[in-house]
Amino acid sequence: MFDLSGRVALVTGASRGIGRAIALTLSRQGAYVAVGYAQRREAAESCLEEIRAAGGEGEALGFDVSDGAAVTAAVEGLKDRRGALHVAVANAGVAVDNLLLRVSDEEIASTFATNVHGAIYLARAAVRPMMRAKWGRFIAVSSVVGQTGNAGQTVYAASKAALVGAVKSIAKEYASRNITANVVAPGFIETEMTARIPDEARAKIVSATPAGRLGTPADVAAAVAFLAAPEASYVTGQVLGVNGGLYV
Image (tube, rainbow, N blue to C red; front, side, top):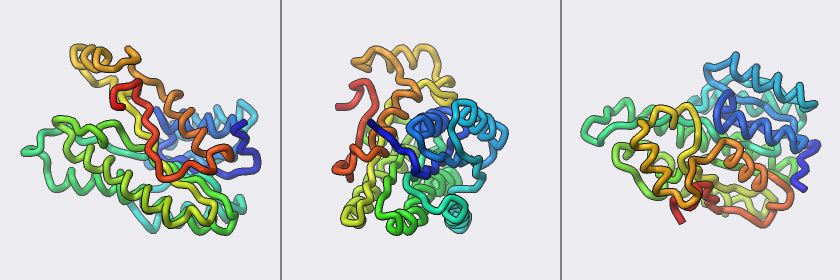
């Protein structure tokens, strides 16, 4: 099951955390994985080394997802080198934690540039090689706060909610081309970002989560692995929550 042998995948924001786990998981499924990164080249190379050490293949691919031309060039270059692109995972994201009255115009613009524009740029670039291959999977990594909202995260939550509307539209446009588009919406996951949460706030989150724990990057990667697989060919336009029951 979940065999991606012969498929080419690109994961943005794959140098650490959830993105790294996704890249490693897709590689274990047999995919050639392009480890996308913006600034953390050494971390991306480390991920690639781990992929190769496990017998997989891939490359580190540096580009800025908020730059539409750069995204297009990266995807086209990957397609030229590997002959196709079958799986595109829009994972790169930034978070602004601030009360609404304190959020700057620049913070709003930069958050949407990465979280929303970046995902749409990736989907737009990926659709052409997917249509040529007559097979494709586009997966956007959102967040539970895009569904529930969260005090102090108006901008971040809005950007993650926007992915849902975009992906549902992409799903309707390209389902007839054997291309699916879905969202994975993680809850609170053990990453560098959540490591900054104070102990008292962390305890409240765990208490509010029926599973009784924070999730792991591997939990999210498993959901992406399913949606990327041939077995998920009839699943499109959906939001798959990976949140331990925090939002149902």
